[in-house]
Length: 257
Image (cartoon, rainbow, N blue to C red; front, side):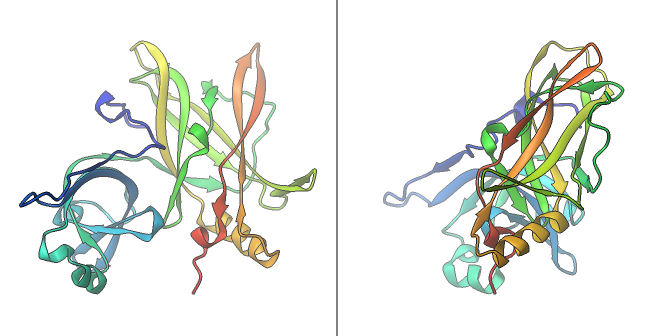
């Protein structure tokens, strides 16, 4: 985890969206922020994919390697010829100006679960695993905001895992897809301890596509993940809690042809 900058501590689920009305000669502009992944569209041209299949373009993205996960703050001018409906359809993106950003740490997903009774070295308990059940899924990367009570300048690392051989549990007629989220200190901080919202991205493409295909075969339109997370550590004992995501549409993971 990068050292947190309070400038970027924002609500993860409620995205800022400020509209400037078109009155007389007032330009039609929109200021917003988005989480997403840099993608190489053509040679020497990078674009930025965000949730719900929307793609943004700026020459600024050439500064980033494809696959980089970002949280960007941008402005879009709908009066630009590049943002006319015809141009957007032809190019496959909206042209924007990026005026601020944060690189989001990304991690692989582990397909085996470590001993859930053993406390890790420098392990930290979570206040919440998924803030208000919110998430973003873009190009195989699953963005979640988890909450820790830590110094704001502390550096952490995360592990997200599942048992790939026994990854679905049926309870009371419901199917649960269990994943296990754990975190530990990478570098201790010296600032005051507060509840900190931290966004990370995990490569869950294989796992989620496997689930989505199975749910589709069963005729289901959506599913949920159940996050198992350490909520307390006392006297060498772990307390595990559970939190579900909101619904994840099958077509959001494997779009229809």
